[in-house]
Amino acid sequence: MLLSTQIANRIVNEVNAVIPLKINIMDQKGIIVASSNPARIGSFHGGAYRIIKSQVDEIIVHYDGEYKGALKGINYPLRLQRYIVGVIGITGEYDEIVQSALIIKRMTELLLENAYSIEQKQMISNICNRYLAEWFSGETKNITPDFINQGKLLGFDITVPRRILVCGFYRPGSNQDIVTMQIIEEVENYVKKLITGMDPLNIYYKTGSTLVCAVAVQTDESAEKIAKELKKRVEEQFPIKVAIGIDSREENFTYIQAAFSRAQKANEACMRTHKHDIRFYDDLNMEVFSDQISEHIKIEFIHRIFKGFSEGEIRKSMVLLEVYYDMEGALNKAADRLFIHKNTLQYRLRSIMERTGYDPRSIRHSSLFYIAIYFYREIYESH
Image 1: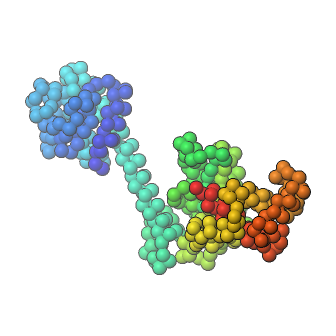
Image 2: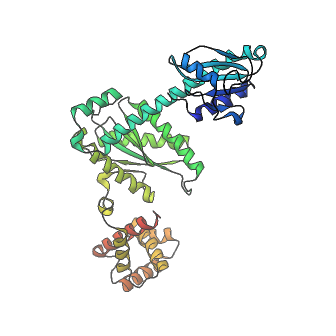
Image 3: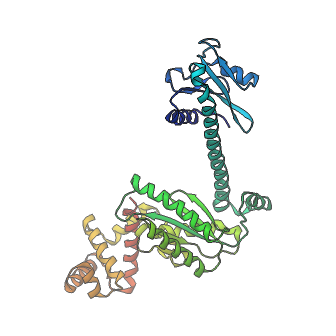
């Protein structure tokens, strides 16, 4: 482990908060990288350099300048797993600092060990994430016996049958502000513990704004049960809504990329409208191919259907038609939802038919309006 300036500065601040003596931390070249006296940072410390070069356990500087750049005080090597990674110096009269000096040295080494432990955990986490990224997003041909064995060394048996749940999180009526992001980070950590607590074979993987859970079940019923439990537990604990997309069942673990992609599409469908918080890929319709169509073509399609309509008129028509179709064409229910009279709703539907040439009440033409509504929501709710 290299002694970084960031870690050295944090250690000086933490030690000084407990013992207010003048402290310097030097790297393996004898350069002061952190100090209670910022003016000394970047200067060479001859005493520290001698400790590193000669591997000695202590150097007492009896007077300023006895060693180049060194002031009166005591200097000790900082050891991590038996290796000297730097030097700590305590400035002052020997008799006044000697009792605190060894305490400061030990405190510093404990803080270094903690920083090293965190660094190691982060490194292992990064290695695991890279491996899972390759499994979820790589090519099937790369899932070789060596790749499988590599996973087992990291604690993953990817050959276990699993279903993919892609989890997204949002606060209704709230933008992605700092508070929301902090809550979502807490939620993700909570879900990670939940998912591995349910079964040690379950795997989680963070990608972008979603959390991917590969759960060791096979049936739709089991996958949905886990999704509902996750959603229920999270929403009981946090002011957050959970949207979960579930894959369609694949033949085996080598096709996990296709399962992941499908679960993503199902999650995106949930997050786009927030009408459904748990969706299976197999339940999608328009969403399956919509991503293959450019935004320009979607806008052109909308304006072809609503030719001559202003943007405001299109927006109002979309709201009306969406409610009408959500109520499955029941005029009274749709009118109640829209807070208008049934006759007013009939008049507006007839007006749309006269202006577009397509009757929203006919089965044959309703599909055109359904597509237009979906494109409209997809474009304007994602901006």
